[in-house]
Structure formats: C-alpha cells, structure tokens
Figure: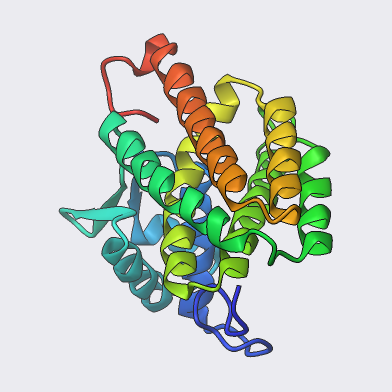
Length: 234
C-alpha cells in the first residue's frame, strides 16, 4: 500500500479514540465477530470496546457511510446482512479488477515480498478458529493488493482494497463451511510464477481462475447450509 497507509493516516501518528473505535468495530464486522444482521447499540459498543459515546457515535457514522451498518430506532444499529446478490456483485467486480491488475503487474512485482506473504498463507488456517482465519485472510488480502500496487494504477489499488474488505465477510463464512487451504496455496504459487516470468496473459488468466474458484467455494458453502436457505446469509 502507499506510504500514507490503507486509511489515509500518516505513519507514526497515534489514532484518535474515534479512529480506534472505528477500526475495532469495523474489524469485528468484517471478520463476522459482529455477525450480519446483528442488532447493536451505542451503549453495548461503549461497554465492549471501552471508549466513550462520542467516539462510538463517530465510528458508527463512518460505518453507515460504508454500508456496513444501518440505523434503526432508539439509537440502535444493525450490521448489514449478506445476500446472494452481495456475493455475486462483489465477485463480478473482482473478476474485472484482478485479472487487469495481474496483467499490469507482470514483470514488475517484488517477488521477495510476495513470497513472504505467501509463506504466511501456506501456514493455512484452522477452520473454526477466528484468529488463524483472520491471519490467513489478512495475508491473502495483502498478497493481492501488493500485486495491484506493482501494476502502478492507484485507483485500481484503492478500489480493490475496498472490495477485498467487503469480501472478507463472505470469505469468513465460506471458509468456515469448506477448507480451501491447499487450493489457495497452489493458486498463489502459480500466479507468482507467471508474474515473475513477465507473462501478463497467463497471470490474468490465473487471477480470473482464482477469483472464480473463491466465488464458487463461497456460493457452494452457503447454498449447502440448510440454516441459511430462508434468511439473509450470515
């Protein structure tokens, strides 16, 4: 990512209380600790995160703008549900962006940096263990953003970062229903090989295959869960 960081903060600056509350709540939403459809209140969040009402209110305002929560009566909020339409739209965007960024990045990547991120991913995750799944998805996210960064189009990078954040929630759900450790590790290796060979068309093709496989994993896992068939996906 760029020197200013993912959220536009200058490195070394202490985040404000509202920033801290925002990052903590947002992280718990993206990792489904706060599950899609959960009702939350300012008072509950104040107690949960140990900050005052004003920082929580400011954080919720930002999260509303991002579409991650919606307001309901009596100062309560609802974590945005996940629908099949959300899954389809997110992956449709990824199928456009990621092959394009891979094609641009061919021959330009920092292979050592990508290998380090791939090594973290190769350690895998333990299904049902939120901490290991979070580490895995964070490294996977950074791997793909580093590829996009290498291509040099910063608008691609910013847009992909937003889409990958939103995809994190559905990935958490999908990985809980199906273990895809081995497949994702192979995909990284194949993509990195094509990028190092300066083969943009192969890199784009592999990126497209990876996104499609991830989409199919999430959809098959969700559709195979009886508990989710007649309600918003969570």
